[in-house]
Length: 372
Image (tube, rainbow, N blue to C red):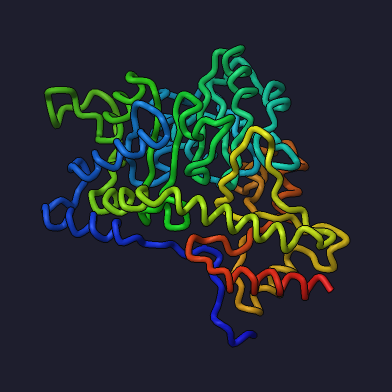
């Protein structure tokens, strides 16, 4: 074991402006949702993404579920989901009673493969969920063309893509609805929290109602629909607003991190570094690499060796289709080789906003040493 200070996989930066907004909120006596700080955060976020509406929520998962509920998905419906993603995507579909239909991913980016999406559409398909994996945008024009041809909703999971762009447009403003997460490891963090974005006035109105228990308009405590208590608190919104004011420098730090990692590691045989398609402005939420022969260690051996040196890493997501819950609920699922390969050999390196140059160089030096 190393005696050097550990290098966390992700550590947040809490800005002075976030602290100031929290104190402002406390001084005003606002703790719950619905206050002026929540409204300010929503307006700032909508302006950043370039959409008409941003609806804050208590988490990224509740934002995903709220999107599904807003579209009134139910037991007769299917939603296409990439097999390589956080399980919250599948869970949000299951919450509505609908069925997630898993599709394999592009072997290079890990994002939904549009060519395979077409093959998965059935008469029950209602929506496609595109995930901008690890901060790299999905091929939204191709997916939108499929959605238009088959009269489907196109949703985005932009939880890992704060500030990312697709052909110059911000992720989160490309589909009918998009969900963001502000969990502690995200580029913009409120500790816990999420956001739903849309350009549709009708969808925004429905989402806001469902988020707050669906009180009947003009008759509070009268409920015609089943709603949810998914509000974001004012303190979380205050932190988020303060973090938003530093988004440009956060993205610059992520770009520096990715460039430095790539420069240092590109010559090591057996490490497949992140690939960026021409359409994407990749924000590298996490710096993700693949460990393959002829690298002398397996992914797990590399992870353990780095851990012994005090350097924290994480595996890539596991196949959703092969999760025990999915097999129990939906039966045996098709195998998706690209997603399963990412799950088997992918990991991400320390990538937080607090990562220092000295820490990054330690990680790179350790990998070079282990490469022999």
